[in-house]
Image (cartoon, rainbow, N blue to C red; front, side):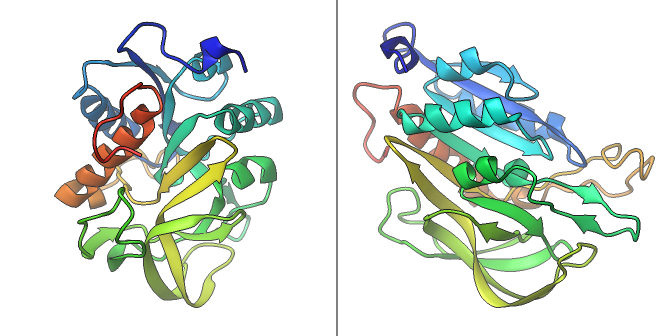
Length: 264
């Protein structure tokens, strides 16, 4: 990776790529909210895409933010993403970034292992979630700067049940035992599941936050023409926006010569 791919194009400027797209979520809402948060720092210049195909933009970015569902890069793109992170890139992955969804003839949703390289880079693959409902998020590493001062909190959201594919540092987690209703792998024994974690790779890292489901009236087509209830889940909580801001600060610190206090 050349030096040009490791620095912003102008002094003080921080280049960011946002990939926001996918199925069954209000991507317009999430994209706009993330752009507003990124816009709080005038140094951040954002390019927005629906997939990972613009590798030149990603290679030239200081950091990458993704909010997707069932958007899987090609193998060439997966390898390029891995190399970019290993070379010092910071990737803030949100909610369904690590999802692959396939609907079976029996009506269940499967999460097949079709992109192991991608999931190993992210550190996990989404497998299932119970019906949306309340659960308690605990702070697993209270001294870590990314969660320091965050208190345990209750959230109504999708509780992600995932396979872990790499060594990760868990920052927030939750406990679950029960059924991932509607998914092919439905029964889950009592265990703790990561909600926020760091996955280091070479000189860079992935920061993954599983919270943040959202759905509007028209986001379940072609299965349902009109979804009756808008869902905002963690987006209704100030602590979620605090976590988003901290993740953005973590990402942009890679693109600054003098990171602000608290940036990692």
